[in-house]
Image 1 (cartoon, rainbow, N blue to C red):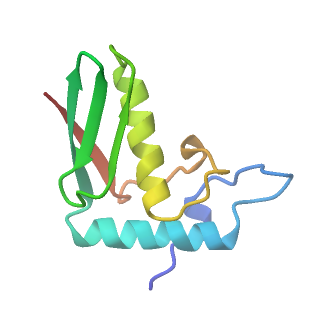
Image 2 (tube, rainbow, N blue to C red):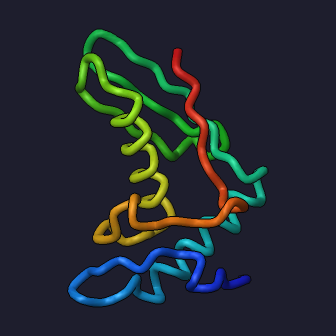
Image 3 (spheres, helix red, strand yellow):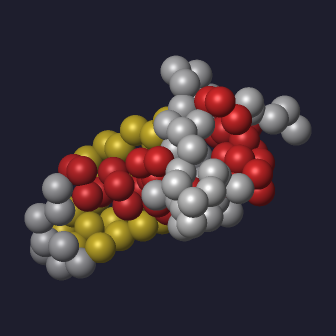
Length: 113
């Protein structure tokens, strides 16, 4: 597995330390696997009266939802980011916003229906 140089990531100040190397390995693994399916994960987001649901087209086991009746786009995208990181064993102690990557980093797109 190709390691992504540590300088491509913002260092989190968790307990006074940096992002653990095991998390960097997990991030590199996620980037590699998402890269193998085209570099972008696509989510179909469905909103209904009793909440919302998002499912990844490339990996149907990656699903997330909530009971919010009118969720903001920001909330949905934050939750999608979190579930993708969880699916690839990236520590939940590292907030998604603390993982900053370069332009070639895989991403996700949400289609709202």
